[in-house]
Every structure is written in C-alpha cells, then in structure tokens.
Image 1 (cartoon, rainbow, N blue to C red):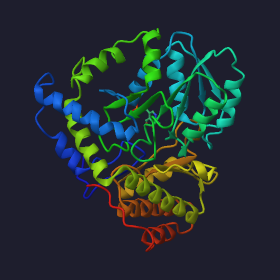
Image 2 (image 1 turned 180 degrees about the horizontal axis):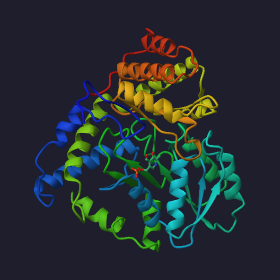
Image 3 (image 1 turned 135 degrees about the horizontal axis):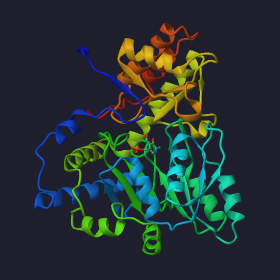
Image 4 (image 1 turned 90 degrees about the vertical axis):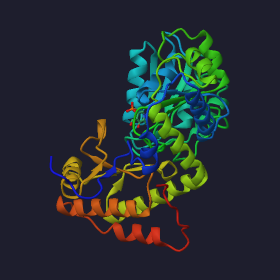
Length: 396
Ligand SMILES: Cc1ncc(COP(=O)(O)O)c(C=O)c1O
C-alpha cells in the first residue's frame, strides 16, 4: 500500500476522528484490572460519565459495540414474548427491532418514511389503545444515523405519559450522546443506550446502558436469559470500581481523557458547536441545489446530514471519487436509501476548518462526478465566518 500524504478525512457519522489527547491516553501500558489503580479509574470514569447522559443513576460500561448495549437494554428488562413498540425511523431502528425479534420479543413497528423522526402522536394513540398494557417497552432511536433525523425524545415521553401507560422507555443515543442535548433523568428515560465511537471521540469498542430505578426494578423480574450483559453482575462489581470480567482497560484510559475534554469544553458549548456546524453543512447542501433527507427542520440532526443525490446519479459513485481523489470517507446510504444518499458526518472532535475542508471535498467530488450543482461552500463559509458566531474550537 502506497504512502498517502496528509490526514485522511474520516467524515462518516461514526466512528469519528479520535483526538490526539485520547490516542495518547490509550497508548499506555495495560494495568491489572483487579489492582487498586484500576478501581480508581473506573470510579472516576463513572463520575465523569453520568452528567454526559444527564443522569445520577448508574451507567454500565460494556466492552462491546453499540449492538451489545442494545441487547443489554432488552435482555435485562424484558421477558420472552413481551411486546415492544418501535418506530421505523431508519436502518438503525430496523436493526434494533430485528435484534429484539431474534431475542423472542414481540415487536410492533410503527411504519415510517425514513425522512421523519418518531411521531409522538402515533405512540400516544397506540399506547392509549393498549388498555391491557400488553406493551412492555417503547424503544426508539434518538438520532437516526442512517437518515440524519433526530427524534424529539421529550415529546415521546410526554406522549407515553398522556396515554398513562406504564411501558418502559428505551432510547438509543449512539450517534447523539455528547453532541446533541440529552437528559436521561429529566426526560424520564429508563434505559439509554450509548456507544464510544461517535460523540465520545473514542475508537469503537465500548458501549453503555444508563439505567433508571424503574428499569432496575423491572430487571429483578425480567426473564430473558442473560449472562454477559447482566446488570446484577455488573452493578455490584462496578460500585467498587471493578468488572465481573476483563474490561477494555486501554479504552477506559481513553474514555477518561475524552470525558475530561468534554467537560473542559462544557456540554452546552459542545452542543452549540455541533448545531453551528450542522447549520453550515445544510447551507452548503442548499447551495449545491441538493435536498436534505430530513424533512422537518425541528428534526434536523446536528451530528450528520444525509444528502439526496439527483435521480439517475449513484451516491456511491460520488463517494468513491471523493475517496480516491481527496482521501475523504463519507457515509454510505444504508438500507432503503442505498445509492440514493450520502451522509456527511460533522460530529465529535471537529472544528470549522475541518468542516470547510469536508465541504470543499464534497463540492469538488460533485464536480468530478459530473453532478450538476451550485456553490455550497461559499454560503457555508459565510455562515461560519459571520462575526456574530462565537468561535467554537474543537478539542485537540
Ligand atoms: C444509532 C445507532 N444505533 C446503533 C448502532 C450500532 O452500533 P455498533 O455498530 O457499534 O454495534 C449504530 C452504529 O452506527 C448507530 O448509529
């Protein structure tokens, strides 16, 4: 493989660019995970991570990808044959529902067009019709990474409450956590699922369950088989700083560093940074004369933008030319929108010039791929350079 000069632009919506500070933190000797230093590391990480979920409750950390934490949320709280209400917001909602079905749960899916988030009214109507309380959980994806649509979690919570339904509320925040405002306790979420490789600026390999008291109580009687994912094994060990099995020690060094960085920037400043970059990206898309997949501006994602290509154009051909000529990876269209969209990731360790480079790469790629387009870079840069916009620096 030939040497490629300069930095690869990893502009998929996760895994994201891992900052130097995190890489350096991981690059240390592995320590004894039963020794005293490790216990201190776990307890420090737990204290630092709770505010990121907006919770005072325990957050379980698994040495697993996000899919593991999806499974953990279900097997710890539910029993075989339990009914779970989900919403078809995109590929990740579809995959979570498939996983639930494989576990022996009865999944009911509210159909969607992959251009909108969860419809709180539809959730309310379905729960209101479930007088017998056969539905045991509502499980949704906060930020659909396949579509760039962010569902309004507090409105879904309010819908569950209006229906006076006791279902557990499970939310996947894998591509929103630490990038888009999220409040596990305040929004009455029972299990929040997170992953390391996006807003947390880490490599893949860690995933999370934030757990409410209601979820913990449900886990005492839930009957789906579980062992590796079992909260009742994890929580007592975690409380003293340890794990029931070998944890991902070096990723935990990285997690500690990443959490310090997030708190140094402050969560609100990080959310504002993501919002500003997302707005600039959307201005670029409009300048190109292309369409954003998300239809409702209230649901625009601040972590990625999915761009629809004109009829007759293959989105993957544009991505391929951009990778080949400019060494930049963009997100592929997944599932139903394969070949119809490409996705620009603008999350994690990211700043104005990284976004400018990303948008320039896309515009040059459109040109090379022969896609008719306008100038999106100029309006995006004008937005970023507007004097009113406070400079927001990405952590390095
Ligand atoms: C919203 C969402 N949920 C779940 C997953 C699955 O996580 P993983 O691929 O880490 O198992 C992803 C992965 O991109 C995701 O974006």
